[in-house]
Length: 252
Length: 367
Image (cartoon, rainbow over all chains, first blue to last red; front, top):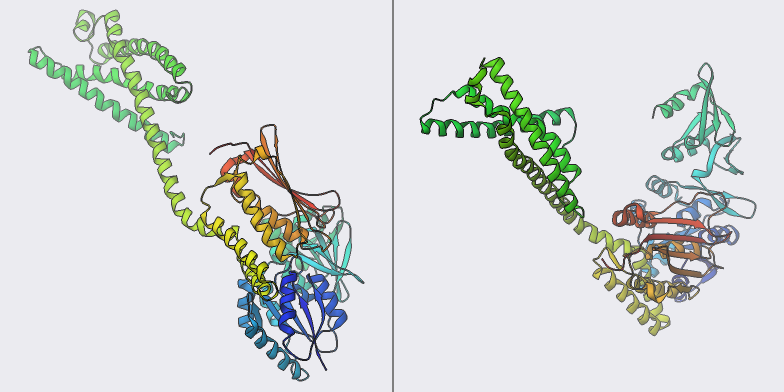
Protein backbone atom coordinates (compact mmCIF):
# COMPACT_ATOMS: atom_id res chain seq x y z
CA UNK A 1 0.00 0.00 0.00
CA UNK A 2 1.30 3.41 -0.95
CA UNK A 3 1.95 6.18 1.54
CA UNK A 4 -0.56 8.95 0.82
CA UNK A 5 0.90 12.45 1.10
CA UNK A 6 -0.69 15.90 1.17
CA UNK A 7 1.47 18.98 0.47
CA UNK A 8 0.49 22.25 2.14
CA UNK A 9 2.36 25.46 1.28
CA UNK A 10 1.23 28.84 0.01
CA UNK A 11 4.09 29.01 -2.48
CA UNK A 12 3.78 27.00 -5.70
CA UNK A 13 7.56 26.70 -5.98
CA UNK A 14 7.81 25.20 -2.51
CA UNK A 15 5.06 22.67 -3.32
CA UNK A 16 6.87 21.70 -6.50
CA UNK A 17 10.04 21.25 -4.44
CA UNK A 18 8.32 18.77 -2.12
CA UNK A 19 6.92 16.89 -5.11
CA UNK A 20 10.33 16.70 -6.72
CA UNK A 21 11.99 15.31 -3.61
CA UNK A 22 9.11 12.88 -3.04
CA UNK A 23 9.58 11.52 -6.58
CA UNK A 24 12.91 10.08 -5.49
CA UNK A 25 11.20 7.80 -2.98
CA UNK A 26 9.19 4.67 -3.75
CA UNK A 27 5.69 3.94 -2.61
CA UNK A 28 4.56 7.53 -2.33
CA UNK A 29 1.33 8.91 -3.71
CA UNK A 30 0.69 12.64 -3.60
CA UNK A 31 -3.05 12.86 -3.01
CA UNK A 32 -3.34 16.62 -3.04
CA UNK A 33 -1.87 20.06 -2.66
CA UNK A 34 -3.23 22.94 -0.62
CA UNK A 35 -2.21 26.58 -1.01
CA UNK A 36 -3.79 27.79 2.23
CA UNK A 37 -4.81 26.59 5.66
CA UNK A 38 -8.53 26.33 5.02
CA UNK A 39 -8.05 24.25 1.90
CA UNK A 40 -5.63 22.09 3.91
CA UNK A 41 -8.24 21.42 6.61
CA UNK A 42 -10.82 20.49 3.99
CA UNK A 43 -8.45 18.15 2.17
CA UNK A 44 -7.25 16.45 5.33
CA UNK A 45 -10.86 15.87 6.41
CA UNK A 46 -11.73 14.50 3.00
CA UNK A 47 -8.65 12.60 1.89
CA UNK A 48 -7.27 11.31 5.23
CA UNK A 49 -3.62 11.43 4.10
CA UNK A 50 -0.94 9.46 5.94
CA UNK A 51 1.64 12.21 5.89
CA UNK A 52 1.13 15.97 5.61
CA UNK A 53 3.95 18.34 4.70
CA UNK A 54 2.65 21.38 6.49
CA UNK A 55 4.02 24.88 6.04
CA UNK A 56 3.82 26.73 9.35
CA UNK A 57 3.43 30.30 8.08
CA UNK A 58 0.49 30.75 5.83
CA UNK A 59 -1.80 33.72 5.55
CA UNK A 60 -4.97 33.40 7.60
CA UNK A 61 -5.02 29.89 9.03
CA UNK A 62 -1.45 28.81 9.78
CA UNK A 63 -0.10 25.29 10.15
CA UNK A 64 -1.04 24.98 13.82
CA UNK A 65 -4.49 26.35 13.10
CA UNK A 66 -4.86 23.60 10.50
CA UNK A 67 -4.17 20.87 13.05
CA UNK A 68 -6.50 22.42 15.59
CA UNK A 69 -9.33 22.53 13.11
CA UNK A 70 -9.04 19.14 11.48
CA UNK A 71 -11.96 16.91 12.44
CA UNK A 72 -11.13 14.25 14.97
CA UNK A 73 -11.76 10.87 13.37
CA UNK A 74 -11.72 7.38 14.78
CA UNK A 75 -8.89 6.26 12.52
CA UNK A 76 -5.28 7.29 12.97
CA UNK A 77 -4.46 10.96 12.56
CA UNK A 78 -1.97 11.96 9.86
CA UNK A 79 1.72 12.33 10.61
CA UNK A 80 2.64 15.98 10.21
CA UNK A 81 6.03 17.14 8.95
CA UNK A 82 6.23 20.83 9.72
CA UNK A 83 8.05 23.10 7.31
CA UNK A 84 9.09 26.60 8.31
CA UNK A 85 11.29 29.37 6.96
CA UNK A 86 11.69 31.37 10.13
CA UNK A 87 9.60 31.12 13.21
CA UNK A 88 11.43 31.31 16.50
CA UNK A 89 8.42 30.24 18.60
CA UNK A 90 7.59 27.27 16.42
CA UNK A 91 11.16 26.02 16.26
CA UNK A 92 11.52 26.21 20.03
CA UNK A 93 8.27 24.30 20.46
CA UNK A 94 9.35 21.64 17.96
CA UNK A 95 12.59 21.14 19.85
CA UNK A 96 10.87 20.90 23.20
CA UNK A 97 8.32 18.36 21.99
CA UNK A 98 10.71 16.46 19.71
CA UNK A 99 8.52 17.01 16.68
CA UNK A 100 10.05 16.59 13.23
CA UNK A 101 10.37 19.72 11.19
CA UNK A 102 12.12 20.98 8.07
CA UNK A 103 13.81 24.33 7.99
CA UNK A 104 13.76 26.19 4.66
CA UNK A 105 15.94 26.02 2.71
CA UNK A 106 16.46 22.28 3.11
CA UNK A 107 18.20 19.76 0.87
CA UNK A 108 17.49 16.21 -0.35
CA UNK A 109 19.20 14.54 2.60
CA UNK A 110 17.30 16.40 5.30
CA UNK A 111 14.08 15.89 3.42
CA UNK A 112 14.78 12.14 3.11
CA UNK A 113 15.55 11.88 6.84
CA UNK A 114 12.27 13.48 7.77
CA UNK A 115 10.30 11.35 5.33
CA UNK A 116 11.93 8.09 6.38
CA UNK A 117 11.32 8.88 10.02
CA UNK A 118 7.68 9.76 9.36
CA UNK A 119 7.17 6.46 7.52
CA UNK A 120 8.68 4.54 10.43
CA UNK A 121 6.27 6.25 12.81
CA UNK A 122 3.47 5.45 10.35
CA UNK A 123 4.29 1.72 10.49
CA UNK A 124 4.20 1.59 14.28
CA UNK A 125 1.27 3.90 14.51
CA UNK A 126 -1.30 1.31 15.49
CA UNK A 127 0.40 1.08 18.88
CA UNK A 128 1.42 4.59 19.73
CA UNK A 129 -0.23 7.51 18.08
CA UNK A 130 1.41 10.39 19.84
CA UNK A 131 -0.82 13.43 19.97
CA UNK A 132 0.33 16.92 19.14
CA UNK A 133 -1.73 18.47 21.90
CA UNK A 134 1.24 19.34 24.15
CA UNK A 135 2.93 21.11 21.22
CA UNK A 136 -0.18 23.09 20.38
CA UNK A 137 -0.68 23.96 24.00
CA UNK A 138 2.77 25.42 24.45
CA UNK A 139 2.39 27.38 21.22
CA UNK A 140 -0.92 28.77 22.35
CA UNK A 141 0.76 30.32 25.34
CA UNK A 142 3.29 32.00 23.05
CA UNK A 143 0.94 33.30 20.40
CA UNK A 144 -1.90 35.68 21.09
CA UNK A 145 -5.31 34.23 20.37
CA UNK A 146 -6.89 36.63 17.90
CA UNK A 147 -9.79 34.97 16.17
CA UNK A 148 -12.17 32.07 16.32
CA UNK A 149 -12.21 29.55 13.52
CA UNK A 150 -15.81 28.68 12.83
CA UNK A 151 -16.90 25.65 10.84
CA UNK A 152 -20.24 25.66 9.10
CA UNK A 153 -21.49 22.66 7.18
CA UNK A 154 -19.13 23.15 4.28
CA UNK A 155 -17.28 26.31 5.12
CA UNK A 156 -14.57 27.49 7.47
CA UNK A 157 -14.25 31.13 8.34
CA UNK A 158 -12.84 33.48 10.95
CA UNK A 159 -14.43 35.65 13.59
CA UNK A 160 -11.99 38.19 15.08
CA UNK A 161 -12.03 38.15 18.87
CA UNK A 162 -12.75 41.89 18.94
CA UNK A 163 -16.03 41.32 17.06
CA UNK A 164 -17.39 38.95 19.69
CA UNK A 165 -19.84 40.52 22.16
CA UNK A 166 -20.43 37.60 24.46
CA UNK A 167 -20.26 33.83 24.64
CA UNK A 168 -22.90 31.53 26.02
CA UNK A 169 -22.57 27.89 27.00
CA UNK A 170 -25.15 25.57 25.45
CA UNK A 171 -24.64 21.94 26.29
CA UNK A 172 -21.28 20.78 24.96
CA UNK A 173 -20.99 23.83 22.77
CA UNK A 174 -20.16 27.47 23.19
CA UNK A 175 -22.20 29.95 21.23
CA UNK A 176 -20.29 33.09 20.25
CA UNK A 177 -22.44 36.13 19.59
CA UNK A 178 -21.35 39.00 17.33
CA UNK A 179 -23.50 42.02 16.51
CA UNK A 180 -24.89 40.30 13.43
CA UNK A 181 -24.44 36.56 13.97
CA UNK A 182 -24.10 33.64 16.32
CA UNK A 183 -21.85 30.64 15.84
CA UNK A 184 -21.43 27.35 17.65
CA UNK A 185 -18.01 26.16 18.72
CA UNK A 186 -17.15 22.84 20.26
CA UNK A 187 -15.33 24.28 23.27
CA UNK A 188 -15.84 24.56 26.99
CA UNK A 189 -16.29 27.98 28.59
CA UNK A 190 -13.46 27.28 31.02
CA UNK A 191 -11.13 26.72 28.09
CA UNK A 192 -12.35 29.85 26.30
CA UNK A 193 -12.10 31.93 29.43
CA UNK A 194 -8.45 30.99 29.73
CA UNK A 195 -7.75 31.68 26.03
CA UNK A 196 -9.51 35.04 26.11
CA UNK A 197 -8.09 36.34 29.37
CA UNK A 198 -5.60 38.68 27.64
CA UNK A 199 -8.47 40.24 25.66
CA UNK A 200 -10.38 41.41 28.75
CA UNK A 201 -13.22 38.96 28.42
CA UNK A 202 -14.80 38.18 31.76
CA UNK A 203 -16.82 35.28 33.06
CA UNK A 204 -20.00 36.75 34.49
CA UNK A 205 -21.82 33.52 35.31
CA UNK A 206 -21.24 29.82 34.91
CA UNK A 207 -22.66 29.85 31.39
CA UNK A 208 -21.58 33.26 30.06
CA UNK A 209 -18.45 35.22 29.15
CA UNK A 210 -18.69 38.88 28.15
CA UNK A 211 -16.32 41.02 26.08
CA UNK A 212 -15.29 43.75 28.53
CA UNK A 213 -14.70 46.19 25.66
CA UNK A 214 -18.36 45.88 24.55
CA UNK A 215 -20.04 46.63 27.88
CA UNK A 216 -22.00 49.86 27.73
CA UNK A 217 -23.76 49.73 31.09
CA UNK A 218 -23.75 47.73 34.32
CA UNK A 219 -26.95 47.87 36.40
CA UNK A 220 -26.83 46.52 39.94
CA UNK A 221 -29.98 44.45 40.48
CA UNK A 222 -29.98 42.84 43.94
CA UNK A 223 -27.64 40.93 46.18
CA UNK A 224 -24.53 41.07 43.93
CA UNK A 225 -26.42 40.33 40.75
CA UNK A 226 -25.91 42.69 37.83
CA UNK A 227 -27.54 43.28 34.50
CA UNK A 228 -24.82 43.88 31.94
CA UNK A 229 -25.97 45.86 28.93
CA UNK A 230 -23.87 45.32 25.82
CA UNK A 231 -23.17 47.84 23.10
CA UNK A 232 -25.89 46.54 20.76
CA UNK A 233 -28.50 46.21 23.50
CA UNK A 234 -28.29 42.61 24.67
CA UNK A 235 -28.62 42.23 28.43
CA UNK A 236 -26.59 39.50 30.12
CA UNK A 237 -27.28 38.80 33.78
CA UNK A 238 -24.35 38.00 36.00
CA UNK A 239 -24.39 35.67 38.97
CA UNK A 240 -23.27 36.46 42.49
CA UNK A 241 -20.53 33.87 42.32
CA UNK A 242 -18.72 35.81 39.57
CA UNK A 243 -19.47 39.31 40.89
CA UNK A 244 -15.86 39.74 42.04
CA UNK A 245 -14.63 39.46 38.45
CA UNK A 246 -16.98 42.21 37.38
CA UNK A 247 -15.85 44.40 40.25
CA UNK A 248 -12.22 43.77 39.32
CA UNK A 249 -12.99 44.99 35.81
CA UNK A 250 -14.71 48.10 37.12
CA UNK A 251 -11.76 48.92 39.32
CA UNK A 252 -9.13 48.40 36.63
CA UNK B 1 12.18 77.23 30.61
CA UNK B 2 11.24 79.22 33.73
CA UNK B 3 8.34 77.16 34.89
CA UNK B 4 5.86 78.34 37.41
CA UNK B 5 6.01 75.45 39.84
CA UNK B 6 6.19 76.95 43.36
CA UNK B 7 9.59 75.45 44.08
CA UNK B 8 11.12 76.68 40.87
CA UNK B 9 9.51 80.09 41.22
CA UNK B 10 11.05 80.52 44.67
CA UNK B 11 14.45 79.41 43.40
CA UNK B 12 14.14 81.85 40.55
CA UNK B 13 13.45 84.74 42.90
CA UNK B 14 16.33 83.84 45.20
CA UNK B 15 18.64 83.68 42.18
CA UNK B 16 17.50 87.09 40.92
CA UNK B 17 17.87 88.65 44.37
CA UNK B 18 21.36 87.21 44.86
CA UNK B 19 22.50 88.40 41.46
CA UNK B 20 21.30 91.96 42.00
CA UNK B 21 22.67 92.02 45.58
CA UNK B 22 26.09 91.22 44.12
CA UNK B 23 25.74 94.00 41.57
CA UNK B 24 24.49 96.40 44.25
CA UNK B 25 27.36 95.57 46.61
CA UNK B 26 29.86 96.08 43.81
CA UNK B 27 28.49 99.54 43.01
CA UNK B 28 28.22 100.43 46.69
CA UNK B 29 31.87 99.45 47.11
CA UNK B 30 32.79 101.54 44.07
CA UNK B 31 31.12 104.65 45.49
CA UNK B 32 32.50 104.17 48.96
CA UNK B 33 36.05 103.53 47.76
CA UNK B 34 36.00 106.54 45.45
CA UNK B 35 34.69 108.80 48.21
CA UNK B 36 37.26 107.44 50.62
CA UNK B 37 40.07 108.16 48.17
CA UNK B 38 38.71 111.67 47.61
CA UNK B 39 38.87 112.11 51.34
CA UNK B 40 35.21 112.95 51.87
CA UNK B 41 33.22 111.71 54.81
CA UNK B 42 31.64 108.30 54.17
CA UNK B 43 28.34 107.03 55.61
CA UNK B 44 28.75 103.34 54.87
CA UNK B 45 25.36 102.09 55.76
CA UNK B 46 23.32 104.85 54.23
CA UNK B 47 25.19 104.89 50.96
CA UNK B 48 25.24 101.12 50.73
CA UNK B 49 21.50 100.99 51.38
CA UNK B 50 20.78 103.61 48.73
CA UNK B 51 22.78 101.78 46.05
CA UNK B 52 21.06 98.51 46.96
CA UNK B 53 17.65 100.18 46.68
CA UNK B 54 18.50 101.17 43.11
CA UNK B 55 19.36 97.62 42.12
CA UNK B 56 16.54 95.95 44.02
CA UNK B 57 14.12 97.99 41.96
CA UNK B 58 15.68 96.28 38.94
CA UNK B 59 15.50 92.94 40.70
CA UNK B 60 11.77 93.47 41.02
CA UNK B 61 11.60 94.43 37.34
CA UNK B 62 13.67 91.43 36.17
CA UNK B 63 10.78 88.91 35.81
CA UNK B 64 8.88 91.51 33.81
CA UNK B 65 11.88 92.14 31.55
CA UNK B 66 12.43 88.39 31.12
CA UNK B 67 8.77 88.03 30.28
CA UNK B 68 9.10 90.72 27.64
CA UNK B 69 12.27 89.13 26.27
CA UNK B 70 10.40 85.83 26.03
CA UNK B 71 7.44 87.45 24.34
CA UNK B 72 9.59 89.46 21.90
CA UNK B 73 12.73 87.33 21.46
CA UNK B 74 15.70 88.78 19.62
CA UNK B 75 15.77 85.92 17.15
CA UNK B 76 13.75 84.68 14.28
CA UNK B 77 12.06 86.46 11.41
CA UNK B 78 10.80 89.37 13.54
CA UNK B 79 14.20 90.39 14.86
CA UNK B 80 13.99 94.02 13.64
CA UNK B 81 10.49 94.49 14.98
CA UNK B 82 11.33 92.95 18.33
CA UNK B 83 14.51 95.02 18.64
CA UNK B 84 12.50 98.17 18.06
CA UNK B 85 9.87 97.07 20.56
CA UNK B 86 12.47 96.29 23.20
CA UNK B 87 14.12 99.65 22.58
CA UNK B 88 10.86 101.48 23.15
CA UNK B 89 10.13 99.37 26.23
CA UNK B 90 13.55 100.05 27.68
CA UNK B 91 13.13 103.79 27.06
CA UNK B 92 9.82 103.66 28.91
CA UNK B 93 10.85 101.44 31.75
CA UNK B 94 14.15 103.09 32.63
CA UNK B 95 12.67 106.50 33.68
CA UNK B 96 9.86 104.78 35.58
CA UNK B 97 12.31 102.59 37.45
CA UNK B 98 14.52 105.62 38.12
CA UNK B 99 11.58 107.59 39.53
CA UNK B 100 10.70 104.66 41.74
CA UNK B 101 14.31 104.50 42.88
CA UNK B 102 14.24 108.21 43.72
CA UNK B 103 11.09 108.06 45.82
CA UNK B 104 12.07 104.88 47.58
CA UNK B 105 15.46 106.37 48.43
CA UNK B 106 13.77 109.52 49.68
CA UNK B 107 11.48 107.44 51.88
CA UNK B 108 14.39 105.40 53.14
CA UNK B 109 16.32 108.51 54.13
CA UNK B 110 13.35 110.10 55.83
CA UNK B 111 11.85 107.17 57.72
CA UNK B 112 14.79 104.88 58.38
CA UNK B 113 17.75 107.23 58.68
CA UNK B 114 15.69 110.34 59.69
CA UNK B 115 17.46 112.57 57.24
CA UNK B 116 15.34 115.41 55.88
CA UNK B 117 15.71 118.87 54.42
CA UNK B 118 18.91 119.99 52.72
CA UNK B 119 20.87 117.02 54.15
CA UNK B 120 19.06 114.83 51.67
CA UNK B 121 20.99 116.46 48.86
CA UNK B 122 24.13 115.11 50.38
CA UNK B 123 23.05 111.61 49.56
CA UNK B 124 20.55 112.06 46.75
CA UNK B 125 20.75 114.24 43.62
CA UNK B 126 17.72 116.45 42.95
CA UNK B 127 14.79 114.63 41.34
CA UNK B 128 15.35 115.70 37.70
CA UNK B 129 19.11 115.11 37.74
CA UNK B 130 18.78 111.82 39.62
CA UNK B 131 16.12 110.37 37.36
CA UNK B 132 17.90 111.50 34.21
CA UNK B 133 21.19 110.04 35.43
CA UNK B 134 19.70 106.72 36.53
CA UNK B 135 17.61 106.40 33.36
CA UNK B 136 20.74 105.94 31.26
CA UNK B 137 21.95 103.23 33.61
CA UNK B 138 18.44 101.77 33.49
CA UNK B 139 18.42 101.41 29.70
CA UNK B 140 21.70 99.57 29.91
CA UNK B 141 20.34 97.37 32.70
CA UNK B 142 17.23 96.50 30.72
CA UNK B 143 19.35 95.35 27.78
CA UNK B 144 21.68 93.47 30.07
CA UNK B 145 18.79 91.40 31.41
CA UNK B 146 17.44 90.76 27.92
CA UNK B 147 20.90 89.74 26.70
CA UNK B 148 21.47 87.44 29.64
CA UNK B 149 18.11 85.79 29.20
CA UNK B 150 18.74 85.32 25.50
CA UNK B 151 22.13 83.71 26.00
CA UNK B 152 20.79 81.41 28.71
CA UNK B 153 18.00 80.44 26.39
CA UNK B 154 20.43 79.66 23.58
CA UNK B 155 22.56 77.64 25.94
CA UNK B 156 19.61 75.60 27.12
CA UNK B 157 18.44 74.90 23.58
CA UNK B 158 21.95 73.86 22.57
CA UNK B 159 22.16 71.48 25.56
CA UNK B 160 18.80 69.97 24.74
CA UNK B 161 19.87 69.41 21.16
CA UNK B 162 23.06 67.78 22.31
CA UNK B 163 21.15 65.37 24.57
CA UNK B 164 18.73 64.46 21.82
CA UNK B 165 21.60 63.92 19.38
CA UNK B 166 23.32 61.61 21.86
CA UNK B 167 20.12 59.65 22.40
CA UNK B 168 19.55 59.33 18.69
CA UNK B 169 23.05 58.05 18.16
CA UNK B 170 22.62 55.20 20.63
CA UNK B 171 19.28 54.33 19.14
CA UNK B 172 20.70 54.34 15.67
CA UNK B 173 22.90 51.25 15.82
CA UNK B 174 20.01 49.26 17.20
CA UNK B 175 17.68 50.80 14.68
CA UNK B 176 19.95 49.89 11.77
CA UNK B 177 19.59 46.21 12.47
CA UNK B 178 15.88 46.53 13.10
CA UNK B 179 15.66 48.53 9.90
CA UNK B 180 17.21 45.74 7.88
CA UNK B 181 14.89 43.23 9.50
CA UNK B 182 11.85 45.31 8.75
CA UNK B 183 12.88 45.83 5.14
CA UNK B 184 13.68 42.20 4.55
CA UNK B 185 11.76 39.99 6.87
CA UNK B 186 13.74 36.85 7.69
CA UNK B 187 10.71 34.84 6.65
CA UNK B 188 10.83 36.42 3.19
CA UNK B 189 14.58 35.91 2.96
CA UNK B 190 14.57 32.21 3.84
CA UNK B 191 11.54 31.46 1.69
CA UNK B 192 13.25 33.16 -1.25
CA UNK B 193 16.41 31.13 -0.66
CA UNK B 194 14.33 27.99 -0.58
CA UNK B 195 12.64 28.98 -3.85
CA UNK B 196 16.08 29.43 -5.42
CA UNK B 197 17.02 25.95 -4.19
CA UNK B 198 13.97 24.40 -5.84
CA UNK B 199 14.31 26.41 -9.05
CA UNK B 200 17.93 25.32 -9.42
CA UNK B 201 16.70 21.83 -10.27
CA UNK B 202 13.94 23.00 -12.58
CA UNK B 203 15.23 26.02 -14.40
CA UNK B 204 18.77 27.17 -13.73
CA UNK B 205 18.26 30.51 -15.51
CA UNK B 206 15.19 31.34 -13.43
CA UNK B 207 17.09 30.40 -10.27
CA UNK B 208 19.92 32.69 -11.37
CA UNK B 209 17.53 35.57 -11.98
CA UNK B 210 15.90 35.15 -8.60
CA UNK B 211 19.32 35.00 -6.95
CA UNK B 212 20.37 38.27 -8.64
CA UNK B 213 17.10 39.99 -7.64
CA UNK B 214 17.52 38.88 -4.05
CA UNK B 215 21.12 40.10 -4.08
CA UNK B 216 20.05 43.50 -5.44
CA UNK B 217 17.34 43.82 -2.84
CA UNK B 218 19.70 42.90 -0.03
CA UNK B 219 22.25 45.42 -1.26
CA UNK B 220 19.67 48.21 -1.46
CA UNK B 221 18.45 47.41 2.04
CA UNK B 222 21.96 47.43 3.47
CA UNK B 223 22.95 50.67 1.77
CA UNK B 224 19.89 52.62 2.81
CA UNK B 225 20.64 55.11 5.53
CA UNK B 226 18.47 58.15 4.96
CA UNK B 227 15.13 58.59 6.62
CA UNK B 228 13.70 60.05 3.46
CA UNK B 229 14.50 58.98 -0.08
CA UNK B 230 13.13 59.85 -3.49
CA UNK B 231 9.95 58.17 -4.59
CA UNK B 232 11.98 56.73 -7.43
CA UNK B 233 14.36 54.86 -5.08
CA UNK B 234 11.45 53.58 -3.01
CA UNK B 235 9.72 52.35 -6.16
CA UNK B 236 12.93 50.64 -7.32
CA UNK B 237 13.10 48.81 -4.02
CA UNK B 238 9.44 47.84 -4.22
CA UNK B 239 9.97 46.75 -7.83
CA UNK B 240 12.76 44.35 -6.86
CA UNK B 241 10.68 43.04 -4.02
CA UNK B 242 7.74 42.45 -6.35
CA UNK B 243 9.99 40.74 -8.91
CA UNK B 244 10.84 38.14 -6.30
CA UNK B 245 7.26 37.77 -5.13
CA UNK B 246 6.18 37.33 -8.73
CA UNK B 247 8.55 34.43 -9.16
CA UNK B 248 7.48 32.89 -5.87
CA UNK B 249 3.79 33.22 -6.62
CA UNK B 250 4.04 31.84 -10.09
CA UNK B 251 3.60 35.07 -12.04
CA UNK B 252 0.05 35.33 -10.79
CA UNK B 253 0.87 38.77 -9.54
CA UNK B 254 0.13 41.61 -11.99
CA UNK B 255 1.46 44.98 -10.92
CA UNK B 256 0.17 48.28 -12.19
CA UNK B 257 2.24 51.37 -11.45
CA UNK B 258 0.45 54.67 -11.79
CA UNK B 259 3.04 57.27 -10.89
CA UNK B 260 3.42 60.49 -12.93
CA UNK B 261 7.11 60.94 -13.89
CA UNK B 262 7.28 64.42 -12.36
CA UNK B 263 6.59 62.92 -8.93
CA UNK B 264 9.61 60.59 -9.00
CA UNK B 265 11.86 63.23 -7.47
CA UNK B 266 9.76 63.97 -4.40
CA UNK B 267 10.89 62.73 -1.02
CA UNK B 268 9.06 60.01 0.86
CA UNK B 269 10.06 58.12 4.00
CA UNK B 270 12.25 55.19 3.09
CA UNK B 271 10.26 52.01 3.49
CA UNK B 272 6.93 53.78 3.18
CA UNK B 273 5.54 51.69 0.33
CA UNK B 274 7.21 48.32 0.71
CA UNK B 275 5.35 47.32 3.92
CA UNK B 276 2.08 48.37 2.28
CA UNK B 277 2.84 46.19 -0.72
CA UNK B 278 3.88 43.32 1.54
CA UNK B 279 0.65 43.71 3.48
CA UNK B 280 -1.44 43.68 0.29
CA UNK B 281 0.25 40.50 -0.88
CA UNK B 282 0.08 38.78 2.49
CA UNK B 283 -3.52 39.56 3.38
CA UNK B 284 -5.00 40.24 -0.03
CA UNK B 285 -3.47 38.42 -2.93
CA UNK B 286 -2.00 35.27 -1.40
CA UNK B 287 -5.22 34.55 0.50
CA UNK B 288 -7.34 34.24 -2.61
CA UNK B 289 -6.22 32.32 -5.67
CA UNK B 290 -8.47 34.47 -7.87
CA UNK B 291 -6.69 37.63 -6.76
CA UNK B 292 -3.46 38.83 -8.32
CA UNK B 293 -3.76 42.51 -9.16
CA UNK B 294 -1.81 45.16 -7.34
CA UNK B 295 -1.80 48.88 -8.04
CA UNK B 296 0.66 51.44 -6.76
CA UNK B 297 -0.41 55.02 -7.38
CA UNK B 298 0.97 58.43 -6.48
CA UNK B 299 -0.67 61.83 -6.86
CA UNK B 300 -0.16 65.41 -5.86
CA UNK B 301 -3.22 66.97 -4.34
CA UNK B 302 -3.41 70.45 -2.78
CA UNK B 303 0.30 70.46 -2.12
CA UNK B 304 0.16 67.08 -0.41
CA UNK B 305 1.52 63.77 -1.59
CA UNK B 306 -0.95 60.93 -1.87
CA UNK B 307 0.39 57.37 -2.12
CA UNK B 308 -1.89 54.40 -2.55
CA UNK B 309 -1.45 50.63 -2.65
CA UNK B 310 -4.53 48.72 -3.75
CA UNK B 311 -5.15 45.00 -4.16
CA UNK B 312 -8.00 42.85 -5.44
CA UNK B 313 -7.95 40.32 -2.63
CA UNK B 314 -11.08 39.40 -0.68
CA UNK B 315 -10.79 42.59 1.39
CA UNK B 316 -11.95 42.94 4.97
CA UNK B 317 -15.08 41.12 6.05
CA UNK B 318 -18.05 43.49 6.14
CA UNK B 319 -18.44 45.12 9.51
CA UNK B 320 -15.10 43.91 10.81
CA UNK B 321 -12.63 46.36 12.22
CA UNK B 322 -9.39 46.76 10.32
CA UNK B 323 -6.33 46.54 12.47
CA UNK B 324 -2.75 47.41 11.69
CA UNK B 325 -0.21 44.62 11.93
CA UNK B 326 3.42 45.13 12.84
CA UNK B 327 4.38 46.34 9.36
CA UNK B 328 1.72 49.04 9.09
CA UNK B 329 2.19 50.12 12.71
CA UNK B 330 5.87 50.67 11.91
CA UNK B 331 4.99 52.79 8.88
CA UNK B 332 2.61 54.84 10.99
CA UNK B 333 5.14 55.53 13.71
CA UNK B 334 7.79 56.44 11.11
CA UNK B 335 5.40 58.93 9.53
CA UNK B 336 4.73 60.45 12.94
CA UNK B 337 8.43 60.60 13.70
CA UNK B 338 9.27 62.45 10.48
CA UNK B 339 6.19 64.61 9.86
CA UNK B 340 4.36 64.75 13.19
CA UNK B 341 0.65 65.10 12.61
CA UNK B 342 1.09 66.31 9.04
CA UNK B 343 1.09 62.78 7.61
CA UNK B 344 -1.33 59.89 7.91
CA UNK B 345 -1.83 56.25 6.99
CA UNK B 346 -5.28 54.86 6.34
CA UNK B 347 -6.45 51.37 5.52
CA UNK B 348 -9.87 50.91 4.01
CA UNK B 349 -11.78 48.15 2.30
CA UNK B 350 -12.55 48.63 -1.37
CA UNK B 351 -16.11 48.45 -2.63
CA UNK B 352 -16.92 44.91 -1.60
CA UNK B 353 -13.55 43.63 -2.72
CA UNK B 354 -9.93 44.46 -2.17
CA UNK B 355 -8.17 46.73 0.23
CA UNK B 356 -6.62 50.17 -0.03
CA UNK B 357 -3.74 51.57 2.00
CA UNK B 358 -3.25 55.30 1.60
CA UNK B 359 -0.44 57.51 2.87
CA UNK B 360 -0.74 61.27 2.70
CA UNK B 361 2.20 63.46 3.56
CA UNK B 362 3.48 66.99 3.00
CA UNK B 363 5.31 67.66 -0.26
CA UNK B 364 9.08 67.86 0.02
CA UNK B 365 11.30 68.11 -2.99
CA UNK B 366 14.53 68.02 -1.06
CA UNK B 367 15.70 67.15 2.43
